[in-house]
Length: 223
Image (cartoon, rainbow, N blue to C red; front, side):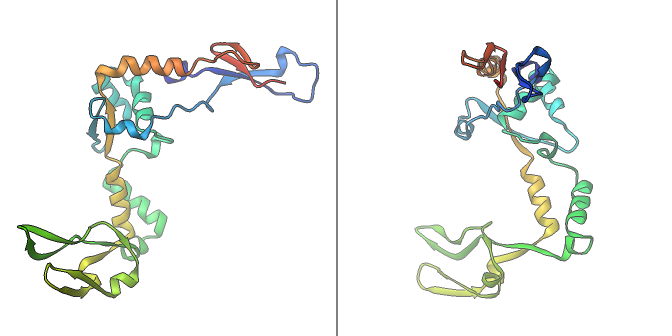
């Protein structure tokens, strides 16, 4: 369905032969017209819902289950701004292992350090009955931070702790696992807005009159 909605473009194959004839032109889909959803719209829960992708589930299956047809897979692709859907979905653990070993080597995949990141550290004290957050977790830091001292205020005084108690080493394999898990959360346009979205996409893919205009579904690259 997606390809049928993309307009065509007529481009010349023999630009040095003049005057031109119809045989000098080829008609193809205009994939340069990319339809991108604004990142801001994902904040509107009214239009979208979050969906957790399970192992072995493809875009076509989700489209069929949620929209009633596998041919609406392109709606999922566009609403998530996928460039290459083949690499956008999570893979199973065995595939992650193979990817890691191919990318880093069988030994470095598991022993090599990809980066260091912080662990959420609380002081153990309370201020106004709330735990004091000393360090936000998940921040990327370097080895110097990991090997040095970290100082935080526990509400009454400064406390020094070893960097390796508030940060940890992430192996190459662990990194690949984390990146794969991030792909599980996608956005689905709520089915009540599907028809409106399709109609809007059709409108966006109609040419307006210009020097290259042939009709609403075809334009030329010119001569």
